[in-house]
Length: 460
Image 1 (cartoon, rainbow, N blue to C red):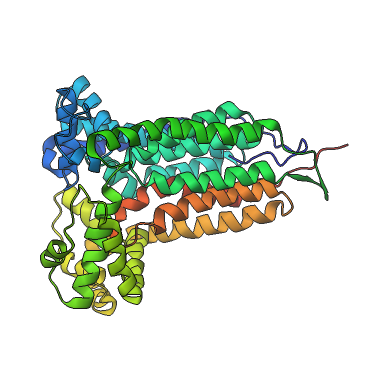
Image 2: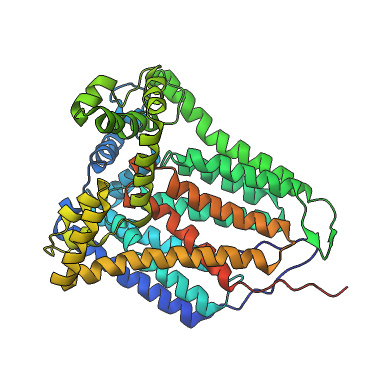
């Protein structure tokens, strides 16, 4: 969605092309077939984190989770919205993990259609269809939709927040921002990384209120009051969702927080591996030394940060390696596992992840030449992501050039880009390729601005 550029500058919205939309919906229906391997072998949907979500969903159905009783600290560790989503699926369709995969593929389809509704407002229909099809075929988003993991639901929440913010950005109508704030709070209770996105969105929304658009070379009248009311409404709605939950955790667990996952990750994935790298400890000894727990103690965070401050350069390298995993790690090996295709690149991938890049690349090059299926799958999955980054960068730069004096438009592009970067770059050592799933819709949206129409100055 492109904001109006102030002072009556607007763009004609293209008429819906039903043929494009029908083909896209057909593609999304075919995509549902990916759930079939999960019906055949439910274990394929299960990962380490899945046990927590699944157990909480079962206990929620029995009224034994998030009920005000400090029974299991995993309730402090995992926020409640995704377990509630699973519990709803179990209630409606039984405890069948194939149904979870099917429901999440449908949710991913809703993300695609929401992107379609946004992009077609400013880009040609063919481009809209092409980019949304590209997103529907995303190997990362599709694969993780088949697993008992929260990425798909969180990605849909981020897309909806951007849609609602875009409507507010254009119209200055505060109810859009109010709805976006409530949904942003709920998204944070899907995955706590929403805590990082909230201040990003609030800063850009505040700038939208303070910086008027321009018309020609003259500033137009001050922003509509609805913009200021929207910022306040967004803040209040998000707080109304999150603050009571934080006080609930304070009452039940003695910790005024949304989740203990941030502190746990700081110890488990930041400080402990740093001790392994710098002091030669094994990981188990490092975790024991740091006393890492999903129910943190008051001084845990300061102790973990002290380890990081003692080894800043080693930490920078470790953080960068984690971000590279999020940005570029291929998904083909997970697809091979889902489809029961034998492959032999685990050693090469592990070598790359450990930071021995030359050894890992040599090993992968050997697989490309000796195992064509593996080589093609590797090249395609990496090429997909590289092309998507290139299209997003092109769209951002070209979008800024479309109307260089339109400050509201530039700020909107900045908001979308900052959302993407926050999702991709903040995980650091915690990083896995699944963490880029919520950023993929933002990359598609940025890419679409590469084909956006130049704003037309209306006649006087």
